[in-house]
Amino acid sequence: MSVEFSIKAQIRNELGRNKIKKLRLQSVIPAVMYGAGQKTIALSLDKKDFEKIHQQAGESSLINLNVDGKDFIVVIHELQHDPLKNQISHVDFQIIKMDEKMTAEIELEFTGESPAVKQQGGILVKNMSKIEVECLPKDLPHHVTVDISLLEKFEDNIRIKDLKLAENVTVLNEVNDSVVTVTAPRSEEELKALNESVSTDVSGVEVVGEKEKKEAEAKADEEAKAETDKKPQDNKKENKTESKK
Image (cartoon, rainbow, N blue to C red; front, side, top):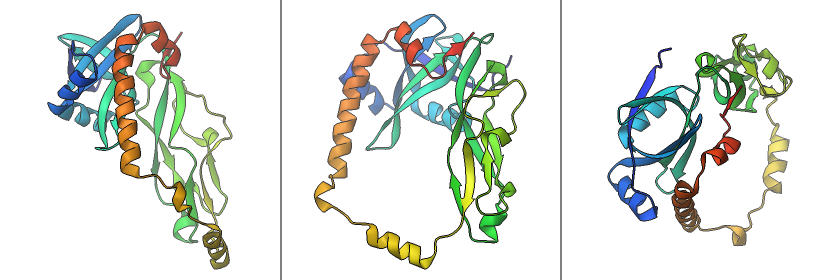
C-alpha cells in the first residue's frame, strides 16, 4: 500500500529540558516514536517540514516516517504546544501494523449551507468536531464530510447514524449522538436577561501571561522526564490509536 504523506526524521540523542530547548531554538521539533513492539525512540524533525505535513495530513492520516533511512508507517498520536508561542513543541508518533485494526479520531468537515440558518436566522450548533472509528489502516478516512444543507428547520439534527462512511469503517460513538443541529435565534428579551445574569469577578481573574508561563515550564519538565522514563508497555495502555486485533 502506498502512503500519501512522507517525512524524514533523525534519531535524537539529546535528552533533558535544556538540550531540548536548544534544539527548538534551531527550528527542530523533538519527537518520539513507539508501538507495534518497537521500543521508544527519541527523534528530531525539521520544524518547517513537519508543519507542512501536519497541515496536509492532520492527525488521522497514515504517514511514512523515514528514520535514518528506515521506513515506518505511523500516525500522529499526540501533539504538545507551546502556550506562549502557539507552536508545536513535541510530537508522539505511533507505529501502525497494516494487518491489524486500529482506532482513531477523525476530523469532521462541515460543508454546504443550512436553510434554517440562511433563511430563518437560526444558530448552527456543532456538538462535535471529531468522531472515533475502527478500521484497518488502509481504510482509515482522512476526514468525514457532514452536509449541513440537510438542516432545513429549527431543531433538525444530523446524528452519528446519518454520517456516510465506508462499510469497512465502524463508528464507535453512540449512533444517536447529535453531531450538529440548528436552534432558533434568541429574542431580545432572552439576550437582555442573559446579559444581566453575567457578572465578572475581578478577584478571580488570573494574569494570563503568568499562568501560561508556569504551564509551559511545567510541561517542559514533564516532557523531559517522560522521554527518559517512557516504556513501550505504558504507551500501549495510553494510546488512543493503538492497534487492535
